Length: 191
Image (cartoon, rainbow, N blue to C red; front, side, top):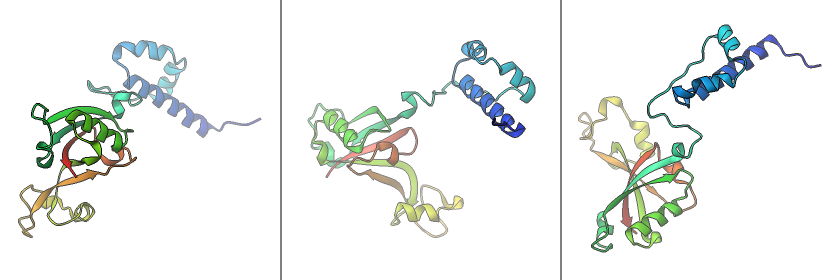
């Protein structure tokens, strides 16, 4: 017969209590009594280890829901693409796209909305970060210094700073691997 050590029991009970805390955090306060009632040992574990941490916020999204896996894209036409669309076509739109969509799928959505052939388009993610002019993003990340992070440039070295842009290369790579965060501003250009 397998023996459970006191340390294993402690770890298992603490883990179980933390999972109850996560469940409570993901649900509104109105469901708290129902959730607690579904865990028979909750009161006993709270008495022994204390109440679990419950962090609710007004904008909390269940991490297992589809909403937690969406990126809100704001697409707008760049200068090269503005002349290629029909006059009545809007020059920008927003769409929530799952992180698991490929760049090909995103190109299809954009092409359909703007009435342009998807494979003739380039998607440029405007990150909002500032990097020294003339350096690639990797070199800029290693050279970053909190003392010189202004938009106008580094006054000490005279280096001009420019907005960092990343092209979402057409392929089967998912958009979630390109974009950091839950919102992205993307400029659409012609190839």
